[in-house]
Image (cartoon, rainbow, N blue to C red; front, side, top):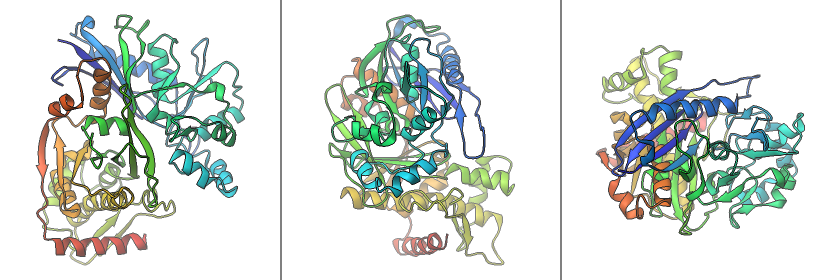
Length: 484
């Protein structure tokens, strides 16, 4: 029996799964690492901490597994986090600047004021925002880091370099498309963008497909040398692939701290008129290229944490469903969870959360239910924008992430979208995507049809609500968002 290792390097910890050819999980490891907050709005990681968390999780996952049975390794990662390291020694030149970090907001504002945003969007499919890696690299170079002898990478690139003993400096197309330096149409680094953002070309990795061997292990604790690393993809694209969203129009939503929705738009990069991002979904070694539209809501599961910690409605987040179910509906209450501003398609960073429709009869249960509904209603706004931009009608939404386990939320999501919701057996779709890409790139699985056949559904939610009542609810939501 051959096995595939999936390394899922996230923002707060690293997960490693060992999967067999039937996609049964044979080994699992997880290790958290520290978050560094030098000042408000700044978030950093020590790259050595990231590497140590990966090797620790790998050790746990490989317990009892014959290392000779490993056919391939796939990597998926927190996407826009920027790492600079020394090509000779491998030592980090600076802490990694994390995707959440806002220190380059002024630089982005300068570029916008200079009228550069339309051109950047045309080439990259992205907005000028501190979220993306390009301005982070520029910041490090402006603050005492000399570029000579250094390599830049997003976390996939850094891990690939470490796993190959420094032999390979590469990234895949999905991660490259999140840097502000990559031309979506030529699928290559852009001299024009490098000059504009202020990043020397010499720092950048080679760009490779998301699937197909791009290096082999060397000197990795607990693994033999020579295992192909054959899958690379940013976490949200990896989840899209792991959910077997292979047909244009297929979409998935990952409910984590925030919510990320991606829709496969086929072999065309669809420019957004509705405030969404255009990104590469994947490129296979066969040459198959897929693009996606992406929209994110900044707050999803974090709204339930607020009910728990801020309002102290319950002790454990898992209690929210029972509390919300104790009332028939939200009693006209609408919660707009804009605690960190509104993301796509509104892009209003100054917006704030609000609760409207309170009456003397409102209870904790009504507010809990309205909070879950607010999470789902944000998704409606994003998916409607995707349908407008892509010209494709959503047939079904596949879901994953922590909050996807909440049946009440999933049923309400189905009702307000008017489409079926499919929840898979293995909700770790992000890791599954990395395994799929690696196994596909090494012949463990023959093609996407075989992968589609291995994807197993755990539960399907179908719309049950009266459409007239849903319309009223959506109108109340739109009015509340306008106020927020």
